[in-house]
Image (spheres, rainbow, N blue to C red):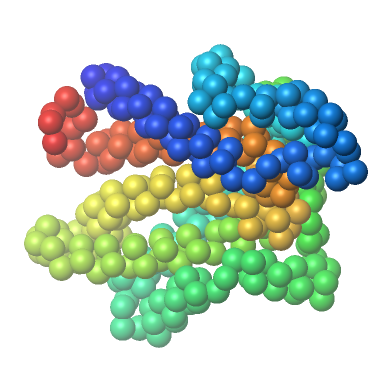
Length: 326
């Protein structure tokens, strides 16, 4: 296990380096932030001073080397717009995005797995067919449209839930601001979390349904029935444990996707997370913030994949994380 983690860590360093080059070149080669940040009426001398102050007068390789050496020490540069470290802006917004992603994934797991299991155990029943039809809607409906409909119904028409913003926060461990400790915080969280979770609920329903349907046809389930085991034990021990292996993999990957692609939901509900910060930064070509955000997301995906692999080996004794060449 330790050898495997060390090897994955070394691979992650290589991936991060390659991604930093691609992200830096891709972001810094598109557009000119000076055209947005500087008044069009400014003379050439003012423009040159601004370009030099932002370090944009240097060749691209030199700019990357400055960025790379700074990133090794946790310095991703200063925001062009806010004149503060880019990493500070992102870390300030990160708790809101993580809270939203955790809530969305919790909703997806709580509803997706039981509904998928129900549909898999009774595939020809009315409830099973209705659940599968609902999962198709979850895949098909655009996220931004669902968000607008949720606001229209629950905020405008019924007036039950707020349509934007984040509720009052409390510092968890004295460091991390979270809003789920208050009723008003949950009220602000419900709509964006539901909107973000809808696709993953549909995904888990279909994945669980397929796994349960296939597991019921296996010999070990038939043998368990022949032994006289109750349906609850067969489903809980023999069926659910086996279908959890692909589910854990998908949940881990989708959790990373929730963090990375919560941009639309955060924009619709004005949720003050990293996604909204990224959109605002793209609008003004705030390059340090964009690059720092993308590299942090890549790092999160790498860590999540490692955790998923470890959990995979814990769920399936046949899988061993060793230094095998596979």
